[in-house]
Structure formats: structure tokens, C-alpha cells
Image (cartoon, rainbow, N blue to C red):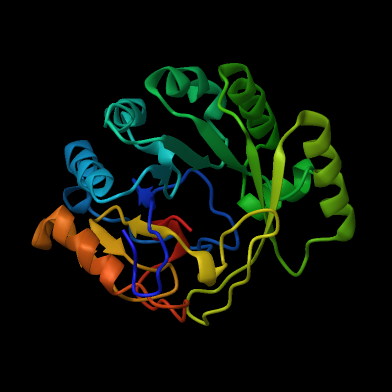
Length: 266
């Protein structure tokens, strides 16, 4: 599929849940959020049908996000359902790694190709502070399990906040070099203010070559992370929603006043 700006759209990011087992300071408010009702969340069958229609229209790369995708009950089954769709060439997942050790082997067997793992510091106390209670040892064990399961290449996502120090960045670079992980620095963004920049070590944030659509947990196909538009697959049908989203994909991101990072998948 080509959009109005001749960009080939071949990547679908799927938010499978708004729920998360962490409360990271740059993602969720301290007092929590109102969770989406289960009845509004897409079923595995609905998600798989969207993937089938997307593949028929030219999508080949799929990534599962959240919230935290590994808290969605039965997530391994969903991975298997998507990996069985003929034409899915690259199936990845972005996770905070807290329960990755438990799931890595089963995810690989189900057809997951690779993972991106969020890790903003190697300091245990700092990690617990940033995530409001997360255990960095769980992440490190999850990374080892992912490597053993062959979920490669492993990418580390580090969100850069105003408090991120050069020492933190150097330590993460050394850690990734030692373990053959690919490191990506992502500057803290604001959907409401429309502030974003290109990912260091990746292609995200570069509007000129953007090739992605997003499916929210409630069924909206979004042309752009930094935009309010969304086309619901339950109302329009998956193929129509996808084609409308491609047709309305903007030249560049602006602002998003209807979503938050925890319910759109970043």
C-alpha cells in the first residue's frame, strides 16, 4: 500500500491491552487510570482477522504492544494465531520484560521472531523509582531467556528523560555491546504537545519514511501516533478501516488528544 506521500505502508503495530504491571513515571499517572472495559477490547479472533486483511493489503511486519502485552491472558495463543497467517514475515513484541523469563520459550515456539525490551537504567534503585516498583532483575533474567529462546535480535528501548545522565547512557551502551543487544534511545515524547524526535538507533519518529499503522486495543486503526484520527474495524470492517487510515495518513505528526501511550502502544 502506498499513501498520499508515496510511502509504502507495510508495518502494523497492535496494542493488545491497555493494562500494565508497571506504572512508569513517563507513561502513567501516579494515581492510575480507568481501564478499558473487557467488552471493548478486541478478541484474539478479531485481531487475527485484522492481520489477515492487513497482509492482503501489503502489511508484512507486525508488532504486539500494550500496555504490557504479556499481561494479556492467553497471549501465547494470539502469537500463534498471528504467526500462522500466511504473509506475516516479521512478528515482534515490545515488552517491559518483567515476566519475559516465564514466556520467552513459549513465545518463540508459537512463532514470535524477536523482542524489544524497555530498560532505562542499569541501576536497580533508579529502575524501581522510574517504574514505580519494577524489579530490574526480572528484566535481566528475561533478556537471558529471550536470547536462549532465539528471539533475536534483541533491542533495548531506553527512554531519555531530562534526568537521564551521560553515565546511564554509557553504562547501557557497554551493557548492550557486551551482550550483543541493539540499543535505541527514545527521547521522552508528549502526545498532547506534539513533541517527538527520531529514535537514535532506529527509524521511529522519522515522518519522511514512516511505514506504519496502529491498531488500538479497542479496534481503531490509527494512521499516525501523533494524530487524533482513528477508523474502527468493528464499525467499518477491517479492510475498509485500513484503507481509510492509509488514505488519511498525514505527511507528519502533529498532536494526539485522544490517546495516551499506555493505550496506543507507543
